[in-house]
Image: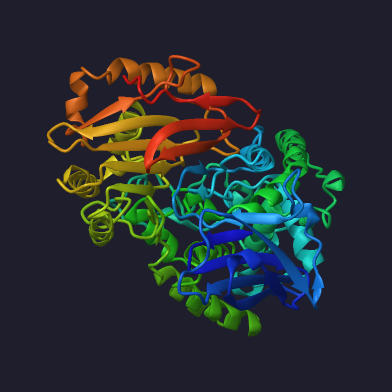
Length: 605
């Protein structure tokens, strides 16, 4: 994988079955020093992090295609499996002046929709083959894996891969009840931690109904990942075609007296067969374009840190705390280090290496270290500048009611965001959840929250918390706010394009809310169609209801796509964001089935 690539440093991530290091050859880069770190995840699984640091005062060449090769024991490595169609080498671009970006989120391997990363790979190959301008960056804004929603066949594959690669295990750190869970499909939700009703406050909802409180609130947690080696294996199986050669997917079977579980297993298996068939193309994509990511809840567990009450229940229990830490540790290895090029995460990586070499003997201590880590967010000095927001671990908690949704960013992070945007004419924000979402859906979420059930409908939009919403709107209304702000979001499993302007400002600035979700996931189409109609009726531009929202000082315009009169799209896709002089010119969805949806940026409603 080509990860963060910038004029001073390029980060590569390689997983191999051997520990011997590789040498990176890329003559077009010019002079550079190669530093590396190897992390052993098992007897036959080694993660290689390569940091190529320019020794030239001018830095690396930017916005130009750069070919590279690998050497192992002074012999060239055959990378032909990673060549894009029609190419004779692997290549990538160090982006500086962004002209187009691929962006998406939410990739669920067993969802029946098409994997849009395959479409992205074909798109990149076509541009390169025809010598046409190509996207220079891939942005993935959350839910790169679904640790809380794992298919039955995938969990069996995880167990097989752990065995084949002899991944190091940490089962001794979780009690035997949890260890036994890995031999059972579709029943893990019954043994995940809960707080017994009599251990809860008498003032809490459900106490007098003798209602136990589940620590994990995912509705699909029946195969929830538990152990660290399971998280590692899932990352490998969602990105590597080679790993599936060690797993006999066709031979995976499941027998049960539960007819629903049996039929679910067969359907998931068929969807996974299609997913695995496309992985070679996905590998080509990752090897030929720099990509950055940001986590959202499913990378760890659904509703992660949604309320202070959720946090209180989860982090006070050693088992549920351990599972959350496992999700973050795996994110560190497979995503986090590549996002910041090791600037802040390398110290964590070194500490993790020490834990592995001591056979995870003190992993609980490392849990506290990684849970306290506060630099998952980062910036990329491109034009426009990219600011990636960590909206999961910097929550603005409601101090008066622990069951109220937390703000997606706390005051300190909002102030830092304000400082990062000051003086910029254009900026790209990566916000896993849309800042400007669909008002009718947010209104429904507000009703559920009023009834004391924020977890039931995932009330984690930016407007759900008064303080965070007010501060964010103040940032966007400032006189020196950027002229053009692009917000890249996912999370919701449908896609849309909104443009936003302040109602009371002399500055002719515009905010674009570009939501692309999901890469391999979809919102129920019939329900989304009804919500689309409801939103058009209740929140049309002249509707008085607009003035009862927290963002009433901002004019939000919905842009329909050119193929229909609707503005919400529920078809798996990767988006293509096109810029000219750092301003948005086109916004398209490249669908998994090959179709293209283009939003009309001029017509608005």
